[in-house]
Length: 449
Image (cartoon, rainbow, N blue to C red; front, side, top):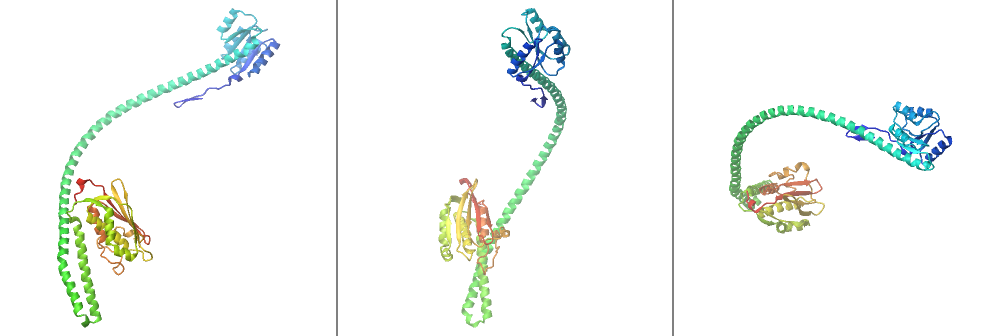
């Protein structure tokens, strides 16, 4: 079976060595000898001793090779072949004759005989080779017929494909003409829409630019107001706290317990208010620094922070480790604030059952450095991940942990100024890891906002 581009042609496969040879010979002894010789070579044989027997085989569907004695008792080889021709059978005759008459050989070959052999002493010896050659020829012919049939089917199929493709191209050309017309109309509509959109974008851009400028002015005014208000409020609060402390000192023995307690609350409130104002002042100063970014050795920054926190590290018996850190373009003072806040929080929110274990590290990524500060402290519930970076947002009371809840908001504001990000990954009781990024910046991009 052969398959070509979806066309299947089936033809018979027949083992050449198992072809059936019909021996038509009226000499019974010679008939047996010929059959025995061919069977030794692997051929199948059948016998006919008369011309009439041979003619009856014309109805056999097999493709027989007929070894035909030219001169039989009842018919000649010519008559036998003519009978086979009349039956429209494909046949392969090899004619044997006891007379080496070339006229007989020519006549038989004209009628379709494949070969002609003279009965002689070496006939039995050469006969298998002749039959083998004919078998090979038959195989080649059958393969050729199959190939021709396959080629014809393929040709017809190809012609049908060409006709179908021609129809498709004609239809496609008609459709393309319609689409070109429609496309021209659409392009004209798009051109008009594009011009209108560009006009709207220019108008909207101008509006956004104006709104941004107004927002910038508003933010600047608010920050300036916070700065001035914080600065101006410090002196009255300092005076209130000083006079309350003076009253407490001079009149302590004249006050009862309730009065002394109330006075203590007032002093503490004034001091906390003053600290809140100082924190607010520090928060407002983050984006008002004129200092340019410069190469900053983060290793030295961390060493300075650890020196600042030395007493608290010793008191808590903390173990602090640090990977090699890079030199980055940044505001050195603000980077120290970032590390001091994160490491200080790791010391503050420690697990009471074990000494703090803090590790500082960094990883280089495609466009930035990613730093992290990891601890084994009390951890943070995921629902508070965003809230802890909000100014004055506290998760614990002052009785348990000191501070005003502004440290992480300052960290976030500093990193925003450096075009970086900050976030936390944590679970309650499993410690926290604070991450922040600093982009790779070129020297000409080092101007602070």
